[in-house]
Amino acid sequence: MAVKKTKRGRGQGRKGVAVIIPSSRELDEYAEKIRALGRRSFDNIVEIGRCLVHCRKQFKAQRVWLAWVKAEFGFSRQHADNLINCYKHRGKLLKFSTLGAPISALYLLARASPQVHAAVAERLEAGERPTVGLVRVQIATTEREYKTVRYVSSPEPSEPAREKVERPALDLNSKAIQARGFAQQFLEFVSNVRHCGMSVEEILAELPLVERSQVIEAARQVEDFLRRLARAKATEPRLAIEDNSETRH
Image (cartoon, rainbow, N blue to C red; front, side, top):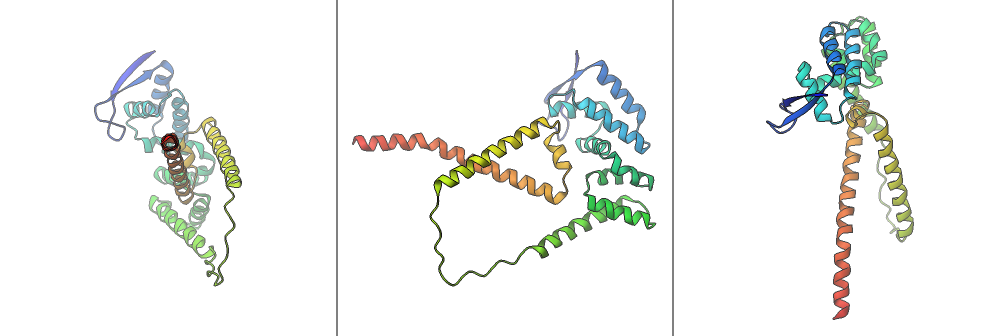
């Protein structure tokens, strides 16, 4: 198999570091097909996304895949993701394409929530002109309404009781059992993500913006917890040695 060397461009890593791109007859044929299709219609966009999904499976590293897309077509990562999302959500986007929505609007709708789809479809069927601006405004409006509904529906915090309430003693055994169960569920979740055939970016792209932020924040909290747990574990032998030295004296 022949290889191509390219320099990692802006936004793909350190400047001037070469990336070796594997080359094969199959990849070259798909590249020619993608260039011949162009982005002239919705059907072409869907077919390009299908080709990109197939080609991406040939690369083991994400950075090599991005370098190949950049070298062959000049696509950025976001643009390649837009094309792939249009292929994955082609069933939902066909209606908007039929109503005359431009390609750039379809890129936005591919990442939008079902609430946005319903609102945009209603406006287009009412006779509004399908534009990118209309979709952007509707996405912002829907997200703002969603946040407002969540804020209004959240229960008000109860007033603190005047009488002093005694807290039950901390049951370390039950907490350890809960932590063990959480760790098992977390490992099963990680295993399912690894075997689902989708990258983390693709999974997050399927979620609405608010839920995507919640998942990212939860992942950060888990990472912080595991880091603190590792630091605490590393100090245990040191404490044991100090205790032994004190007992000898």
